[in-house]
Length: 128
Image (cartoon, rainbow, N blue to C red; front, side, top):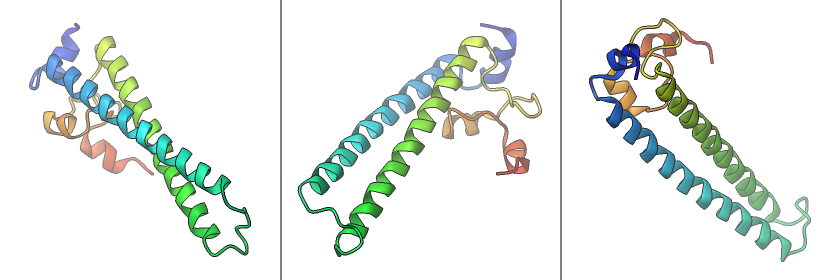
């Protein structure tokens, strides 16, 4: 472990940071599995009925439901990628350091958002 990571994350400790990443990753994987199951159920249920979204009163709501689950699934998969990147930063020795200003990310932010890449001031100033 490098000195920079020890300084950046020594408050909660690297073990605690790693445990938070692992726990968040496990929860995200469970969420992804559930959303994939929900999506499959929606698709399967639609396969059993005549597909005519334009004239079927239920068609628009099932299309919306399918799109909503697909969006939630994409968000969860994006979060999983962020967690994997955070774990790589931990292994490289630059976890807990802001990518914007280079200062340590406060422990409280890392506890709330283990995959955080920036401190709050840099996150607020970053365009969305």
